[in-house]
Amino acid sequence: PAPTLDVTATAEPTPSPTAAVPPTETPSPEQQPIISPALRSPDGALIAYVEFQFVRCPPGCSVVFEDRQGTELLRIPFTDPALSRIADAWAAYTIDAWLDDSSGVVLGGSCECDGAGEHPVVIVKPDGGVIDSGVSALLGSSGAHVSPNGRYLLSRDRIDSPWGPGVGCAISGSAKLIELLTGDVISEVPDVGLALVDWQWLDGSNLAYALRPFPNPDDGTCDQQQCEWRQLPVEWHLLTIP
Image 1: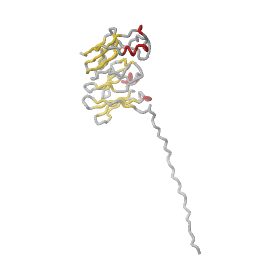
Image 2 (image 1 turned 30 degrees about the vertical axis):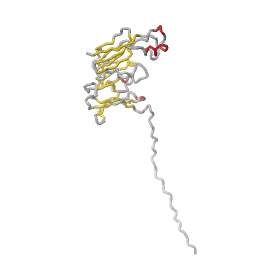
Image 3 (image 1 turned 135 degrees about the vertical axis):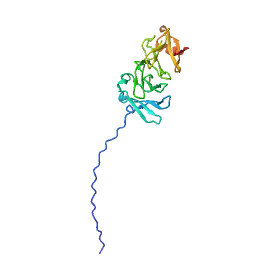
Image 4 (image 1 turned 90 degrees about the vertical axis):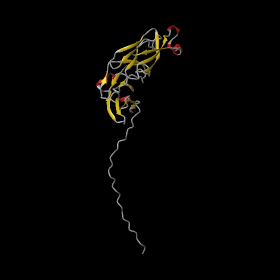
């Protein structure tokens, strides 16, 4: 007789239950925190930067201090009551400068913004303290308004444009130098019928600034003559802080 083949039925294994895993949401670009350039303190002991999140500012924005190994030591959110002027005004995207004795950083004195505005400027200390002397600055460009030693602020005075309203048509004719620790005005660039068109900090106590005669509105509108006017020669002056 032909051999027979015994077939043993095999039962299908019972699938084990699996936990549902929710899909991981990728944060949108607006939700990604922006880390400003890190500035090392003059004594080399600390690093400071701003962590900024557009859609969650002020709660998503902070001043961060780290040690030289990159270990976070302190995080001060913009929701801190001492930073209320920063939180309620233009956002501070970056650290402006360290004080020359490494006792704090200047916040709010740069303009990475969509237009000119009145910006509050404060000093934040590595121990969490904030020095707010009520100082504000009219900022309309990304120029260095804060001195390299973090002690002084150039705040231009607001004036009406000789051409009337228009984007890029406003010109400052005078400015104040303000001591950030006290809020005192220590010097001024006088308004003598000249426009303040440029400036450069040479060091912590010397400021070079350029003046040019105001344009004559009878020569045309802002759109008609702004480019030509901005190419005219300027006269440079030196202001030394006593």
